[in-house]
Each structure stands twice: as C-alpha cells, then as structure tokens.
Image 1 (cartoon, rainbow, N blue to C red):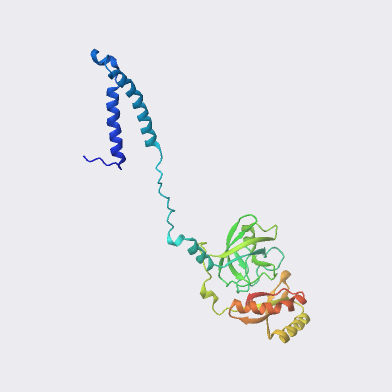
Image 2: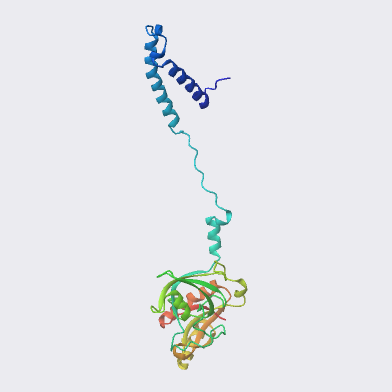
Length: 289
C-alpha cells in the first residue's frame, strides 16, 4: 500500500503501529529471558517508555487541536416572499396612519340612532368608525399605542372634524381600545382584510369618490353666508353638506373644490391654509361622498 504523506489516516495508523511496538519493547524486564537483563536492551526499554509517553502526548495534542481552516457559516436562506424588500413593498400598498383618535355615540351626545355619512343608522354598539378619506366599507385595524389594545373597525362615517385627530370610533370601539375614560388616545391604524391581514384599499371603493376640502361646519345662517361669499370670491364655488352636530344641532359643512387625486387636494389645501389661519378655522381634506 502506498503511503500518502498528506493523509491524516495514514499518519494515525503509523503512530498506532509505532506505539504498539514501543509498548512491546517497553514490557518490564522481569518477563524477558534472564540473559537479556545484562545486555543493552534494558536501557533501551527504559528510554522507550519515556519516549512512548512523549509521542502519545504529541499525538493527543495533534488530534484534539481544531482545524485552522474552518468553513464560513452561511446565513439561512430566506424564502422569496419573506425578504425585507418584499415585505416593505407589500406594506407600502397598505394605508398606514398615526395620530389621535376620539369616540362618539355616548349618552346624550345625540349621535345614537342618527344617520351616518354613508347612509347607515349609527349604532354605538357596532364596531365602526369615522375617517375623513378612507372609502366607506374599508376595514381598519386600530391599535391604542398607550396600552397595546387592538380592534378591527369598519369605516361608515366621516370625521373627526377636529384637525388634530384622525379617527372617531364608536362607543364599542372605544371600549375595545380602552379609551372610553380618557376620551382621546394616540393610535396607529392600517387597512386590513376581513381576516385581519394587512391589505390595500379596495380599488373598487375608490372609483367616483373625489376629495374635497372642508373649511368649517356652521349652524348660524349669517355666518354660513358670509364665509361662503369670501370662499367663492377667493377660491371658487363652494358646496354644502347638512349634518347633525354634537347635541343634535344641525350644521352645514362648507367645502371647497372637487379633486380626483389626493395630490391635487393637497395643493389646494396649501392655498387655503393662510385663509383659514387668519380666520381661526381648521380645514382638512375629506371625501366628497
């Protein structure tokens, strides 16, 4: 058999044979023939004992030392659908928003049993909400950032009509989110499907539903006429939407423009910003419905 100097197995076999030979040679002199005792062999045997111990020590160190060429560990393979870039692209299609949420439909506020902007009768015990721009029928998952509570709500009304807030939830929604007593909470919302999975807004719900800019909701006819004349002179015709305000008071929501895309509505809102600021009004973009 050819001896391969690069093979560790060949070297291992050679050391085993060598150590066996040394052990045989290193047997106690008492069991060897008498005539051998007086020869040079006893000295060789004594030397061989220590040499064999030294060789075995070197061999043990060689076998237990780690290999210097360690293969680099490869990162686990990620399925194509779970890659970060794929996830980011999917989330980008989902409507996400953060801000303050309030609730309505409590005792004495006059909303229970009234007609919502979608035409439904408002039911405080239903899991519904009011949003300014999401189409009616859109389902959103809302999370209270203060306590981590979540719930799913269906958009069936318009509001809130306070610029600093993004969502008005029903009384039951407020209980689910734990904001009945606080009245207002910081929330995060995203659009989802019926199973609660993140989902984009249904394109069918967006058709024929342009944006408008609501400037005010007033009850006094004289104030309505005066503001309407100023808006018409500066920005063009205005439209009205009659609605029920807090306490059952009937108000007129005064709106400007009709814009098929959000970008157009934002540009118009910027032009209106100074006008509203000078008069202490809170304008915001809303679906025209």
